[in-house]
Length: 365
Image (tube, rainbow, N blue to C red; front, top):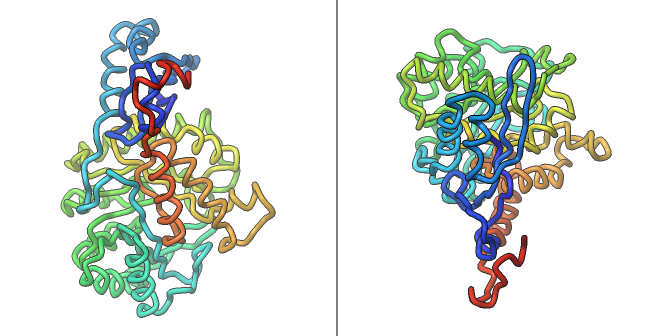
């Protein structure tokens, strides 16, 4: 069920339709695109909130209950994680300490430079610092665990001691364990805890929040002809299965974040489809993270700009996603993102300034 008719508080003032808050707000929605998918066919219908259960039962008896559960997940407020509240969008600053990341590879090979830049991101308004020691860009080669730990642990330790909420960006259980012991308070795994047989157990014992990202294939091969029946729905199903695997491993749902993985095993069309339908992932009941910053799809839509010249496109994707309820933004350009989000948030939450009696009951409908 994909929320539609999303609007901010000022627009809600002039709506006579029944509305529900999306994930606790600030946006509300009036309709859902309900999708019923089987091996044989896909049925889709846009329904007002009051009619979704009736439509679902027409597809198969008893599905009204399933629809109600999804609606409950769509509307439930997202609980704070690592002391970070989702009353406003959360900014995760990207701090790669790799020689070969697609955008900032080599910029922070010196731990002192990485620590300095991390502190600057905090000063600029980052809520979380995501530290990665292995590039997962298309075509990237794996590095040894020893090398990855040598890159990230000094930076994790130093920034954690400064009070930063540090996330460790890794697909390796040993690095997860070592980083959490060094002070990391979040795990961000591009394989959704499936790339290492020990990852689920380490995440369960760590008792920290975990980002589950979708990736089709491996970094070395993921951009070789990726295919989906329906990109957004296939990714939704994958993430739902990973949530079930986490539950079976003893990882509480309240600790989990989902990321549809823009650019990881996806064509330009797939990326755009996922972005357009990103509100769908709120139905998983978790905060949704978007990592679109400086990604190559921006250059393909523009003039082929190099990664560090993709800030305008990054901000456009961010603002589009915010209007569809995304809670966490993983970005390279923290100060610029904070400014853009602050303006968006103020415009979303401003009152119309009219007295209720002055507004025609269906002025915007």
